[in-house]
Length: 199
Image (tube, rainbow, N blue to C red):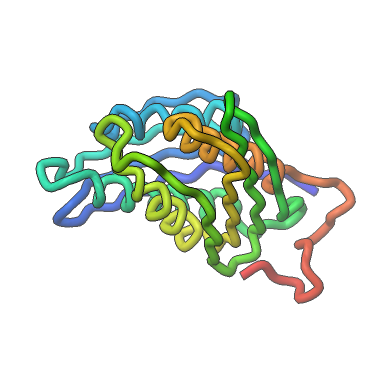
């Protein structure tokens, strides 16, 4: 099976945000991130590095309001970029999972590139913010990604006290699980579905 370049360039402009993104699923972990939210930049850098994705993100958002639109809309665009880069999904493993430790935190992520969005989110935070990042936005970000990508996504906190560690472990475990799911398997000649379609 001939492997196509799996690169997506997605732009989204609204009255609240202006976002441009380039995603290469077969990269080496290079990232250039500027969302205006330092902790969010750190999380997206971690996602790119640990998933070995090349990711360029530029966001101009209404941060004078709060961080909500910037983070949620970036999730929407990342989901769309994943979907676009995957194309017809022929030959990919489809499923991915990772259990990832970060100091005292332990996160489980499992996902299915089924074409059907769903988020099961089981994480708890003890502070409202990490830096300028509202912790409640972790759910909103991953919900937006799952919807944009058509992805069944489960995130479960198995342990953890430090909110920075918990959130970062979530982004890293998501990266590892997604990297597994998008890999080609030479035994899969079409799409891995009895329906013949992943939509």
